[in-house]
Image 1 (cartoon, rainbow, N blue to C red):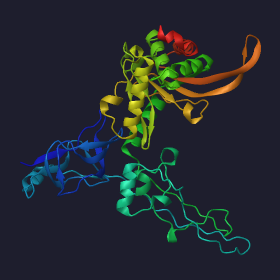
Image 2 (image 1 turned 30 degrees about the vertical axis):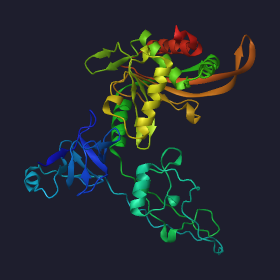
Image 3 (image 1 turned 180 degrees about the horizontal axis):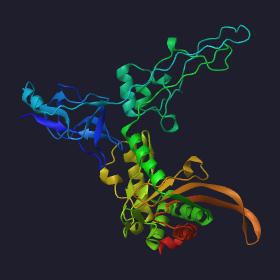
Image 4 (image 1 turned 60 degrees about the vertical axis):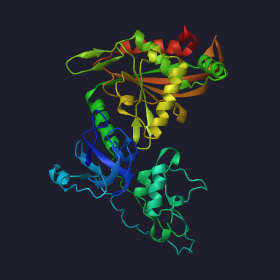
Length: 413
């Protein structure tokens, strides 16, 4: 009666998965729908639930190890059940493990010109009273007996994530001497982190895009005075709350409807002109970057777009995104304005032919009606695949986008 669970195919491009963590151990009871593991795919680290009731009798892939799709992941059955036959018939799989971190070389002491006084030992890392860490990092730290107060975070805004705990090595005696301290010692240290499945895929896909698709870039300044007033007016209505990014998504969607050449994809032997408008919105997560898709964005209201983007952002950070959430984009937006970035260029996200890099709104002097006055400007850069989009087509799209952003009320008509 035992049931074999195989390594699932959790994305369209996934060929193997890495078990980031087991949430159950052999001998534990399992209910259908209960989470049993976290599996790292080429897109994200996703929670995996059981489809069966019973007891976890066997784990086929250890935490931290990888295996191909459809290989034996686990067996669930009744307590004491003989599963030797299932194990014997299961195909042998060579597990692929993530590379172990390379041990850092011993610190090299450089003597100072003169004897230095002894200074008190200082902690290698000392966080504030409140420690920001992901739930998985907290769980792993508790299992390993690691005090997160002394772990450096590499996630967004210094958040401690799983890899920080996995690669944490306390300095001898729990101390470190910083360069330039009165002891006169200088230390050089580093940590080698294994490359996640997601990071491997990002590296491969963007390298292919950058080195096979001839990119060119078009940059434009947008007068944001009307957009600022529009957003403020909308958000003053009870129950309504939109961001500048929501306005950008809507403006891009309506502009793509006018310029189908930009809403196209290079397919090798032909160019696909998409009549539907699916906008990919880049979302940063601890492991890299995800691009959930707002489908038929040109038909949706500002509030509908806002609600979807917020839901996607929350699902991305809690590893709840499903393959259907990130597949099918026809155009991508990457917005770093909230981080104070004035302008940047982005790499085209295949199979799209264009990606729009959106910078922050900056208050600058502008000329209006012959006078220099304060103004609010947002700089955007359109990266284009020249195999599909010509300069004139890209420029025409940006002009339509600019008109929408500078007259946002027109998007309601």
